[in-house]
Image 1 (cartoon, rainbow, N blue to C red):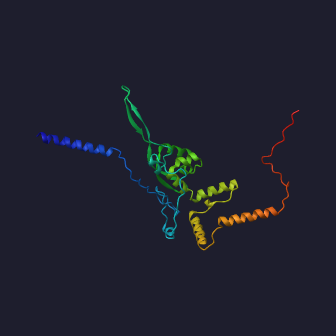
Image 2 (cartoon, rainbow, N blue to C red):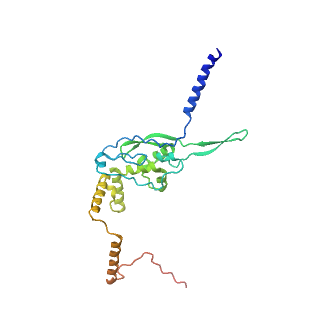
Image 3 (cartoon, rainbow, N blue to C red):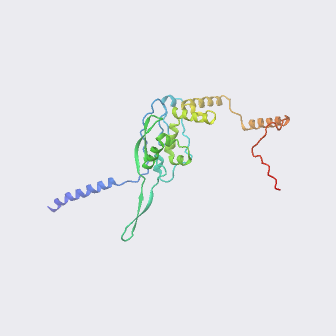
Length: 262
């Protein structure tokens, strides 16, 4: 009778132990799962994966095209590797102590960033982008006016906050016609020549393919020796020609006359 009554308590103890084990956060070294991103409307270039790969459509992959995203200038983060797969800003795991009030006994503890799984709207892409993001970065996104404005920040501190995953998203929205048109207007306002942002990614790939065909046919650019010979020829030509000095006055770094002291 005693063994029969003790059996339910054993079952309850084992069930409680299993629940506790499920609630504990396990440490794993496996790679993070990629986000299931939606398809971008009116565009054949999808949103890149966390690994940095851009799956191309069949029309371009059949011709041997490959897209390489420019490398992140600050490189992958060596501390808190989970921040490489989301918008974590400058958040890190902080360590400290719990100090008891009575005996002042210190117990080690850690503070983890508040990370949420969100769907953020991208105006240029026209879809919701799935990503992990901290609450601090969410407040910054609301402050600057959206995900696109946060990713397109030009200051070095903002680029450093993006991390590798934010850098990939930044590259993807820069391929959209809206952002290319915006950059073209900025270059025109500054008086600069039009850049590659006025052309779509597919047009750029086509031009690179044509350049590769010309290189294969022998229409290669000039070598260093040929450029050096051409520069020497221009220098010798300038030595034989005569130039009239004094036509234009160069005021750059001109010293002003000092007043005479009586």
